[in-house]
Image (cartoon, rainbow, N blue to C red; front, side):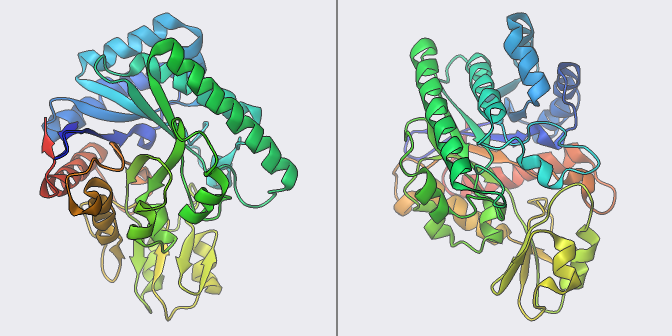
Length: 373
């Protein structure tokens, strides 16, 4: 979906397809003609934006065969779908029975992560709509924090140098700028926006920046005003919400304990890497908790639980309408990223849920003065 900002800038709104399990090209084509087509119909979108997730296997197949890449682009056009952003965080196996810490491998110290991201950038130049010259890729925040050493930091810096050089060369060759956003996340080397500034502040500002995930920032207890003013290019905003438990009501979070994904949990007095640790006494019960469990934007969980949707709304306002005026938005790529539908308690209809999330987001953007085009 495209929206016109009061400044005249075009803002792109998409939903992230990492919610779907397919990791090969046949499965991706099936998604486009199946669930994505249904979401488009339910949302009433003339063009539905996708934050496309390509596993390493799918990316390699597209990179090695221009005909397959051309067929994917043609299928997008046929279905009224468009891609300006890719989710390059999960490398593969994102819907395995157990993912947890594996989602952070390979990390940015490893050559496989660099090669995968450069392949995604090449692919994205071919998938961009004809009238769009800038694309974005979100990626992991360098590495999980344990095992971080000076040698690993040096390897990361070397890979980021090669990444920036490759993106510059790609822009010169294709006329299209692909920007990579590193996504701060609790428990990682880049956990907060101040850490992003410290570790990425000297990087190429044209091609490298951050991807802000509203759920992650809320779990990190970061102020929306601080996140919006961090001083680094904001390549993309992931429109997401965390689950929050009030003091004394934390046992209700037990319904969200599951084995696939990591659910980092924080309160003002502590942090645990996963929700079961917190529920076992790892955090004090006299303070509210926030848990890294992406919640549907439009639907509140059963009481006493709530979500951080108010934080998301504030962040949207600060990024879309900086200084409360007509200045250009601080990011033009928005991606609804509730990838947890398959592990939510109770039955769900993913297509109906994502369509409702997109509607929730559109209505809030409309209130900020953005008009669908």
